Image 1: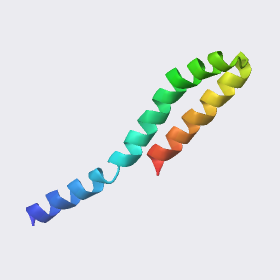
Image 2: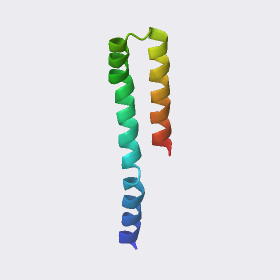
Image 3: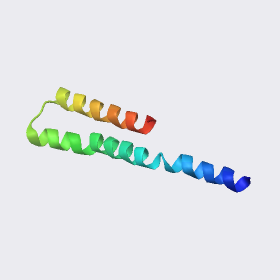
Image 4: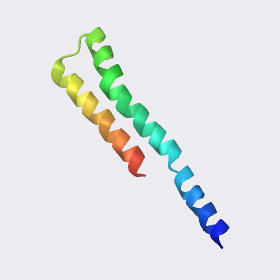
Length: 65
């Protein structure tokens, strides 16, 4: 009985690893990559901020699902 319970806990948490990795990657991209690329392309600060918010929202949705 205790082995089944422990095994079910492992199965539930291992399913979220991909979503957590994706969300973390998107958060990292929004903090570092988006501003660097936007500066290189000459985008304005408001457009850069909007892109960052969109990517962070996508990361948040990935973690929640």
